Length: 282
Image (cartoon, rainbow, N blue to C red; front, side, top):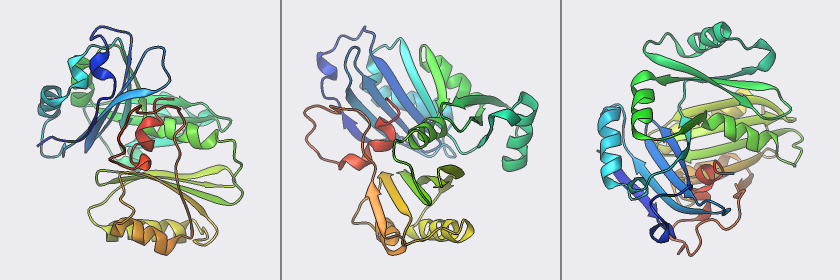
Protein backbone atom coordinates (compact mmCIF):
# COMPACT_ATOMS: atom_id res chain seq x y z
CA UNK A 1 0.00 0.00 0.00
CA UNK A 2 1.15 3.53 -0.83
CA UNK A 3 0.67 6.05 1.98
CA UNK A 4 0.92 9.82 1.71
CA UNK A 5 2.92 10.81 4.81
CA UNK A 6 3.51 14.54 4.30
CA UNK A 7 1.75 17.07 2.06
CA UNK A 8 2.44 20.82 1.89
CA UNK A 9 0.91 22.80 -0.97
CA UNK A 10 1.65 26.45 -0.21
CA UNK A 11 1.05 28.51 -3.34
CA UNK A 12 0.37 25.54 -5.62
CA UNK A 13 -3.38 26.16 -5.97
CA UNK A 14 -2.81 29.74 -7.20
CA UNK A 15 -0.52 28.64 -10.02
CA UNK A 16 -1.58 27.79 -13.54
CA UNK A 17 -1.64 24.03 -14.35
CA UNK A 18 0.32 24.82 -17.53
CA UNK A 19 3.58 26.49 -16.73
CA UNK A 20 7.34 26.26 -16.72
CA UNK A 21 7.62 25.25 -13.06
CA UNK A 22 10.13 22.55 -12.22
CA UNK A 23 9.18 19.19 -10.71
CA UNK A 24 11.90 17.69 -8.50
CA UNK A 25 11.35 14.07 -7.59
CA UNK A 26 13.34 11.67 -5.39
CA UNK A 27 12.63 7.99 -5.80
CA UNK A 28 13.79 5.05 -3.68
CA UNK A 29 12.56 1.52 -3.01
CA UNK A 30 10.59 2.85 -0.02
CA UNK A 31 9.51 6.39 -0.89
CA UNK A 32 8.74 9.00 -3.52
CA UNK A 33 9.20 12.66 -2.61
CA UNK A 34 7.99 15.40 -4.94
CA UNK A 35 8.64 19.14 -4.87
CA UNK A 36 7.53 22.00 -7.11
CA UNK A 37 10.01 24.79 -7.71
CA UNK A 38 8.16 27.77 -9.15
CA UNK A 39 9.48 29.39 -12.29
CA UNK A 40 11.35 32.61 -11.61
CA UNK A 41 11.37 32.04 -7.85
CA UNK A 42 13.99 30.64 -5.51
CA UNK A 43 11.72 28.77 -3.17
CA UNK A 44 9.95 25.43 -3.24
CA UNK A 45 6.20 25.87 -2.97
CA UNK A 46 4.82 22.34 -2.64
CA UNK A 47 5.96 19.01 -1.21
CA UNK A 48 4.57 15.48 -1.06
CA UNK A 49 6.08 12.37 0.48
CA UNK A 50 4.70 8.90 -0.27
CA UNK A 51 5.96 5.73 1.43
CA UNK A 52 5.61 2.11 0.32
CA UNK A 53 7.51 -1.18 -0.01
CA UNK A 54 8.54 -1.91 -3.59
CA UNK A 55 9.18 -5.55 -2.62
CA UNK A 56 5.43 -5.96 -2.09
CA UNK A 57 4.15 -3.89 -5.02
CA UNK A 58 5.02 -3.50 -8.67
CA UNK A 59 6.31 -0.15 -9.86
CA UNK A 60 3.28 0.09 -12.12
CA UNK A 61 0.93 -0.17 -9.12
CA UNK A 62 3.05 2.23 -7.05
CA UNK A 63 3.01 4.94 -9.72
CA UNK A 64 -0.67 4.40 -10.41
CA UNK A 65 -1.61 4.91 -6.77
CA UNK A 66 0.72 7.90 -6.38
CA UNK A 67 -0.81 9.58 -9.44
CA UNK A 68 -4.31 9.00 -8.05
CA UNK A 69 -3.46 10.53 -4.64
CA UNK A 70 -1.02 13.26 -5.69
CA UNK A 71 -2.13 16.86 -6.08
CA UNK A 72 1.29 17.86 -7.41
CA UNK A 73 0.93 15.45 -10.33
CA UNK A 74 -2.44 16.96 -11.28
CA UNK A 75 -0.37 19.58 -13.10
CA UNK A 76 1.98 19.23 -16.07
CA UNK A 77 5.72 19.95 -15.96
CA UNK A 78 8.07 20.47 -18.86
CA UNK A 79 11.13 20.12 -16.63
CA UNK A 80 11.42 17.13 -14.28
CA UNK A 81 14.59 16.58 -12.26
CA UNK A 82 14.59 12.98 -11.04
CA UNK A 83 16.98 11.70 -8.35
CA UNK A 84 17.26 7.94 -7.85
CA UNK A 85 17.98 7.01 -4.23
CA UNK A 86 19.00 3.42 -4.97
CA UNK A 87 21.71 1.42 -3.23
CA UNK A 88 23.24 -0.26 -6.30
CA UNK A 89 25.75 2.51 -6.90
CA UNK A 90 29.54 2.79 -6.90
CA UNK A 91 31.55 6.02 -6.75
CA UNK A 92 34.83 5.67 -8.64
CA UNK A 93 37.74 7.91 -9.71
CA UNK A 94 37.07 9.61 -13.03
CA UNK A 95 40.39 8.43 -14.45
CA UNK A 96 39.39 4.79 -13.86
CA UNK A 97 35.99 5.15 -15.54
CA UNK A 98 34.87 3.51 -18.75
CA UNK A 99 31.65 1.64 -19.54
CA UNK A 100 33.20 -1.82 -19.12
CA UNK A 101 34.84 -0.86 -15.84
CA UNK A 102 31.55 0.59 -14.59
CA UNK A 103 29.71 -2.69 -15.14
CA UNK A 104 32.57 -4.65 -13.57
CA UNK A 105 32.61 -2.41 -10.48
CA UNK A 106 28.86 -2.74 -10.01
CA UNK A 107 29.00 -6.52 -10.40
CA UNK A 108 31.91 -6.83 -7.96
CA UNK A 109 30.15 -4.76 -5.30
CA UNK A 110 26.48 -5.60 -5.81
CA UNK A 111 26.51 -8.91 -7.72
CA UNK A 112 25.18 -9.88 -11.13
CA UNK A 113 21.99 -8.27 -12.36
CA UNK A 114 19.77 -8.58 -15.41
CA UNK A 115 17.16 -6.29 -16.91
CA UNK A 116 18.73 -3.10 -15.65
CA UNK A 117 19.98 0.18 -17.09
CA UNK A 118 23.46 1.41 -16.14
CA UNK A 119 23.74 5.17 -15.70
CA UNK A 120 26.52 7.43 -14.49
CA UNK A 121 26.85 10.99 -13.20
CA UNK A 122 29.82 13.30 -13.20
CA UNK A 123 30.22 14.69 -9.68
CA UNK A 124 30.99 18.38 -9.98
CA UNK A 125 33.84 18.91 -7.52
CA UNK A 126 37.61 19.00 -7.37
CA UNK A 127 37.63 15.31 -6.38
CA UNK A 128 37.13 14.07 -10.00
CA UNK A 129 34.62 11.33 -9.19
CA UNK A 130 32.02 9.43 -11.21
CA UNK A 131 28.91 7.87 -9.68
CA UNK A 132 27.83 4.72 -11.51
CA UNK A 133 24.49 3.13 -10.68
CA UNK A 134 21.84 0.64 -11.78
CA UNK A 135 18.15 1.23 -12.39
CA UNK A 136 15.77 -1.65 -12.99
CA UNK A 137 14.45 -1.54 -16.54
CA UNK A 138 10.88 -1.87 -15.28
CA UNK A 139 11.37 1.22 -13.09
CA UNK A 140 13.16 3.10 -15.87
CA UNK A 141 10.25 2.43 -18.26
CA UNK A 142 7.57 3.39 -15.73
CA UNK A 143 9.35 6.66 -14.94
CA UNK A 144 9.55 7.67 -18.58
CA UNK A 145 5.94 6.75 -19.27
CA UNK A 146 4.63 8.78 -16.32
CA UNK A 147 6.86 11.88 -16.36
CA UNK A 148 7.76 14.40 -19.07
CA UNK A 149 11.17 15.79 -19.97
CA UNK A 150 13.05 13.82 -17.32
CA UNK A 151 16.63 14.66 -16.37
CA UNK A 152 17.84 11.80 -14.15
CA UNK A 153 20.64 11.76 -11.59
CA UNK A 154 21.45 9.86 -8.42
CA UNK A 155 21.00 11.23 -4.89
CA UNK A 156 24.62 10.30 -4.09
CA UNK A 157 25.83 12.66 -6.81
CA UNK A 158 24.03 15.70 -5.47
CA UNK A 159 24.82 14.74 -1.88
CA UNK A 160 28.54 14.50 -2.61
CA UNK A 161 28.54 17.81 -4.49
CA UNK A 162 26.92 19.52 -1.51
CA UNK A 163 29.41 17.99 0.94
CA UNK A 164 32.61 18.20 -1.10
CA UNK A 165 31.94 21.78 -2.25
CA UNK A 166 31.17 23.02 1.25
CA UNK A 167 33.24 26.09 2.05
CA UNK A 168 34.14 24.61 5.43
CA UNK A 169 37.39 22.64 5.29
CA UNK A 170 37.07 19.61 7.51
CA UNK A 171 40.16 18.60 9.39
CA UNK A 172 39.93 14.99 10.52
CA UNK A 173 36.68 13.09 10.00
CA UNK A 174 33.20 14.33 9.10
CA UNK A 175 30.13 12.07 9.15
CA UNK A 176 26.81 12.87 7.47
CA UNK A 177 23.64 10.88 8.18
CA UNK A 178 20.48 11.32 6.07
CA UNK A 179 17.42 9.41 7.30
CA UNK A 180 14.48 8.22 5.22
CA UNK A 181 11.78 5.56 5.58
CA UNK A 182 13.81 2.59 6.93
CA UNK A 183 16.85 3.87 5.04
CA UNK A 184 19.97 5.77 6.09
CA UNK A 185 22.46 7.32 3.66
CA UNK A 186 25.93 7.77 5.15
CA UNK A 187 28.84 9.89 3.92
CA UNK A 188 32.23 9.82 5.62
CA UNK A 189 35.07 12.22 4.82
CA UNK A 190 38.51 12.15 6.39
CA UNK A 191 40.60 15.28 5.82
CA UNK A 192 38.28 16.19 2.96
CA UNK A 193 38.73 12.84 1.17
CA UNK A 194 35.75 10.56 0.57
CA UNK A 195 36.04 7.27 2.47
CA UNK A 196 32.44 6.04 2.45
CA UNK A 197 29.10 6.68 0.81
CA UNK A 198 26.55 3.95 1.35
CA UNK A 199 22.89 3.24 2.02
CA UNK A 200 21.83 1.11 4.99
CA UNK A 201 18.39 -0.42 5.38
CA UNK A 202 17.11 -0.73 8.94
CA UNK A 203 14.05 -1.87 10.86
CA UNK A 204 14.96 -1.03 14.46
CA UNK A 205 17.12 1.46 16.39
CA UNK A 206 19.49 -1.42 17.20
CA UNK A 207 20.18 -1.81 13.46
CA UNK A 208 21.27 1.84 13.25
CA UNK A 209 23.34 1.48 16.42
CA UNK A 210 25.18 -1.51 14.92
CA UNK A 211 25.92 0.27 11.64
CA UNK A 212 27.26 3.41 13.32
CA UNK A 213 29.45 1.53 15.79
CA UNK A 214 30.79 -0.60 12.95
CA UNK A 215 31.60 2.50 10.84
CA UNK A 216 33.35 4.18 13.77
CA UNK A 217 35.48 1.08 14.43
CA UNK A 218 36.20 0.15 10.82
CA UNK A 219 37.28 3.65 9.77
CA UNK A 220 38.90 4.49 13.11
CA UNK A 221 37.04 7.75 13.68
CA UNK A 222 36.80 9.44 17.05
CA UNK A 223 33.31 9.39 18.54
CA UNK A 224 34.19 12.40 20.70
CA UNK A 225 35.86 14.60 18.06
CA UNK A 226 34.08 13.72 14.79
CA UNK A 227 31.39 16.23 13.72
CA UNK A 228 28.18 14.41 12.81
CA UNK A 229 25.56 16.15 10.66
CA UNK A 230 22.07 14.65 10.87
CA UNK A 231 19.03 15.32 8.70
CA UNK A 232 15.93 13.66 7.37
CA UNK A 233 13.05 11.73 8.89
CA UNK A 234 14.37 11.24 12.41
CA UNK A 235 12.57 12.31 15.58
CA UNK A 236 14.92 13.85 18.15
CA UNK A 237 12.85 12.17 20.87
CA UNK A 238 13.22 8.72 19.32
CA UNK A 239 15.48 5.84 20.31
CA UNK A 240 17.26 6.30 16.98
CA UNK A 241 18.46 9.77 17.89
CA UNK A 242 19.14 8.74 21.48
CA UNK A 243 21.62 6.15 20.22
CA UNK A 244 23.35 8.72 17.99
CA UNK A 245 23.76 11.03 20.98
CA UNK A 246 25.18 8.20 23.06
CA UNK A 247 27.82 7.39 20.42
CA UNK A 248 28.83 10.84 19.18
CA UNK A 249 29.36 14.11 21.04
CA UNK A 250 29.49 16.65 18.20
CA UNK A 251 26.05 16.49 16.57
CA UNK A 252 24.39 19.16 14.44
CA UNK A 253 21.46 19.33 12.02
CA UNK A 254 21.97 20.05 8.34
CA UNK A 255 20.85 23.45 7.10
CA UNK A 256 18.92 24.24 3.95
CA UNK A 257 20.85 25.61 0.99
CA UNK A 258 18.00 27.67 -0.41
CA UNK A 259 16.09 30.68 0.89
CA UNK A 260 12.36 31.08 1.41
CA UNK A 261 11.46 27.41 1.53
CA UNK A 262 7.75 26.70 2.05
CA UNK A 263 6.41 30.20 2.47
CA UNK A 264 3.57 30.37 4.99
CA UNK A 265 4.47 26.91 6.27
CA UNK A 266 2.88 26.28 9.69
CA UNK A 267 5.86 24.31 11.02
CA UNK A 268 4.16 20.98 11.69
CA UNK A 269 7.45 19.18 11.03
CA UNK A 270 10.95 20.31 12.05
CA UNK A 271 13.11 21.76 9.25
CA UNK A 272 15.63 18.90 9.34
CA UNK A 273 12.89 16.53 8.06
CA UNK A 274 13.03 18.24 4.66
CA UNK A 275 16.73 19.00 4.28
CA UNK A 276 17.77 15.90 2.24
CA UNK A 277 14.95 16.54 -0.22
CA UNK A 278 15.09 20.32 -0.51
CA UNK A 279 18.86 20.41 -0.99
CA UNK A 280 18.27 18.53 -4.24
CA UNK A 281 16.57 21.62 -5.65
CA UNK A 282 19.55 24.00 -5.45
